[in-house]
Image 1 (cartoon, rainbow, N blue to C red):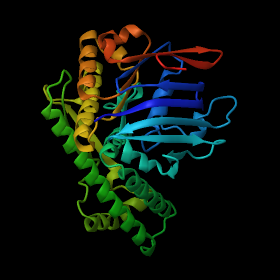
Image 2 (image 1 turned 120 degrees about the vertical axis):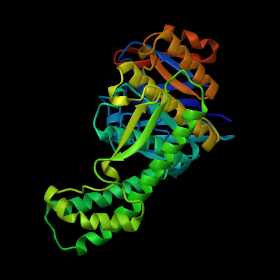
Image 3 (image 1 turned 120 degrees about the horizontal axis):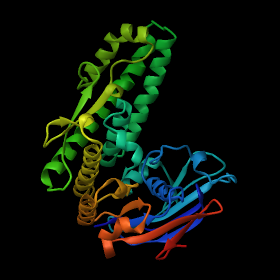
Image 4 (image 1 turned 180 degrees about the horizontal axis):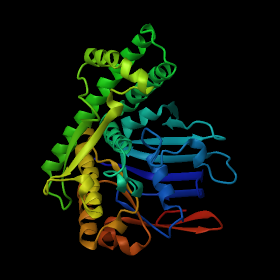
Length: 369
């Protein structure tokens, strides 16, 4: 079974005043000069999954300038033997709205019919940046297995913000904390379990495949101590930590203090100490492993968004990546500055050229308008 977009239309979205693409399930190779609007296409596709998209942008920031009239993205999504018409839009800077098959839906509902994974240049620093970026990366992968992880994470963040407000105001009456800590414990334990399950799926998917990309040993660590395994233990940990938390003005225990630790398995070298090329290869390996695991768990490989991925690989590893994407059966949207970067794909991909004229992105290629 396949998961893919057979039609994508954009209206007043970023640099695209209007665009329409008719597609099949093959990979989509998008090429053109820097700044032409290639990544904007990938961002539009990323909106077919829960969350804020690959740039984590607010709805008002996606509107075409200077009009700022609002924007709309629609698509025909083939998923598990069904075709869904999905509409995503924002009017005058308001929150993003979603319709699936003509009915209003939540963003989480998108996770029931689609899985979308992405790798973008800003993620190249994943192993050497702060823990927050690695948590976000892990949570995106976790959400691909368990879409409800988004709701649980929001519930935890909301309760923690309220608790942190009490801490900053130096509120010492324990009665104010009980309900919030109960909510944090329930959501926090679920977050931790979801993450552990996702890591187990990724490790299994890496070990089961022979790939040209290196495997990574992954571990979920905490900045201090261990993450409590039960809600009762987490409530107790929050209660015991109140004195320290009051001094710090923030919550010091919980899944928001977790980190993703990676090791280049074949060399036994921490990912943060690997070369830039090795770090990139490890990231690609994880995305491919995520895709293989989802193909088994969801019933179809995810849509992959690989921005400027070809430019960072030599010809041999680039060809290996294309072979693996095609073997997976994923509709992978890939960008590059020139068509020659996709020569190894041949007829296995559909080519789209994006150019810019008078600040408007133009799309050309088979069935593009």
